[in-house]
Image (tube, rainbow, N blue to C red; front, side):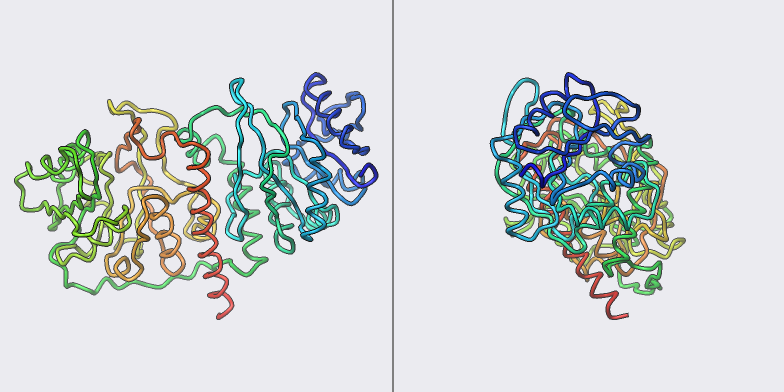
Length: 484
């Protein structure tokens, strides 16, 4: 193995580097390269000086001349790495046996002094999000990596590793090896509910722009890119009892449902609207609270079925004859920000000629005090490329609203996670999605939120499902492009 592997890792400090380099040496890797921003001496490794780190194009163009052997191992973290016995040899052998372009593995995670298994998920064609967790140790087939770097034509500061991975995946499998082969230190100890909004943090905007460039180039290369050409909507269907319906699926939200209802019923519009609540067999006081509102605009539905997720509740509401021309979302935890929301959303449909409108929201705690990251406005969306970039990001935003005839045709997946994202991707395939960048509701984060704190298995299940959604949409778009 010694003559076959180049190992590449970032410079941190000599104390952190020493055990990592010794671990690579123990695996009989002889070509060890440390990437640093200035000249330093590192025992047991060659130092390559570049201004950027592993995420920069310049770094990888410089490294091309330093890579030797059949495989390239990239370690992406600065913390000390503990490699399992024969781990690199195992990854290399599997890479050869499967004819893969890259291999990644499960690992142990050391977090706050505790060691636990951290499984990762299978890579799919639709695994286009730039934060896909491969772990920190990646083994590439050298020729596949070199070909990807040579083809890289953008001067990235943040997206080089992402671009390499996408380019390698175009002609090679990225193979998951479900074996615990190393231990890494987890530096981001936030809960899942705190991490999920990183991609819309304005501080990360430069990085996100680069990621969108790389993803768009990939979609063009594989025939899944959609030009900014959209089906026009006439809004001529008029067989609706009201102009708009607010839809609230709910189950056991006695603490919040009353506030949500009040925020809808106080809306002021120059057209008729109603509120459809699909009460999914609540066992607390939720149903009682709903019935306490004496307002003819409130429609309380308790489904006969007991197998409905949030998506199924939406389908039940939209299929109801009392549903309006536009169906507008409000979660049972949340509140509209003022009395103009419904009117502004309906106005956006006509002005932007879209089948779906997505607004913005303010993150608050249960006391309605603003909490980080504050306003979630998804300003990364552009009318020209939003539906392509939507395959990369983790969501389209909220609140969401739909032209009911389109929603009745497409229908919502009967799940309670990712159903809104699947719907947005499907609709954006043919129709324009409108945007409102001012906050329309207050999103209350509290311990009972479904995504506030997820264990690794639940996170993996959510991420795998969203990647499956992306894969199905990715293939649908390839078919659409091939027919044109």
